[in-house]
Length: 304
Ligand code: SF4
Image 1 (cartoon, rainbow, N blue to C red):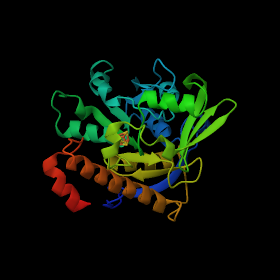
Image 2 (image 1 turned 90 degrees about the vertical axis):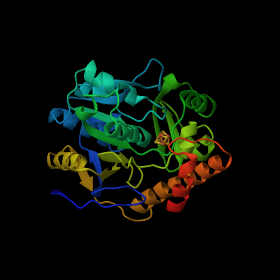
Image 3 (image 1 turned 120 degrees about the vertical axis):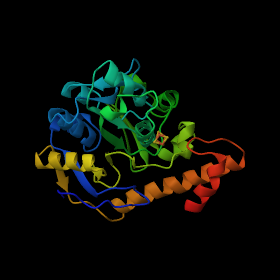
């Protein structure tokens, strides 16, 4: 770790320079955030080090567990928005506003792999985004297998956990289950039972680990309470390395075996294979699918 590493081109996990297992050292962050609290810790650290002057995150919305994008410019605001929400939050809708209304000059963005792809497209083709995309300073991605429209999420909470979103204190996906916790109860719903409820675009999404981010992370491959962190660009590597050096993140040995990186790689590969099949089926039915067009079918099939 440290210094410039060689970029590894990995067909399952995307381009990266190093993978490590880490968690935040701040107990407040660990208590509130998901898994190892990496995204929260990195955003707070980046803010304190003036690498960013604010960040777009999924903040609290008007309804419980229905997030709305906000621009967080203080540690308190970042901490308040931490934790995964398991429903869509249109973070990219805030990109322009973050520079125009909030005056950010060094913007952080957190997002799912599809949102990160959107950010990279904005940067590549900044139409209508003059003096906006050049202010993006950090792009942090979170692993995502699928995501749920708010009504679906509400339905699981009501039907399977027999409670209401207002009473839920934490949700978590681990070991193939969606855990819904209230202050005095916990319900585990097998992820298989949630299939069919995901938003339709997820059926065609091939990126599990936010391959286009500066740094991405999630719980898969790490022991409980820790996260697998994929350092990708020089921006992401330098941020993570400095955070480790300054004691903001602590690192433990990475499990490269069956329940570690092997599992992460397997999930990422299976997602791609499954979704290519879904694209294939949809194209055979003459349907248009997101991210591709009928004339790209051969390329997709050739490269799978
Ligand atoms: S599965 Fe893909 S399309 Fe669905 S929310 Fe996750 S990253 Fe976005």
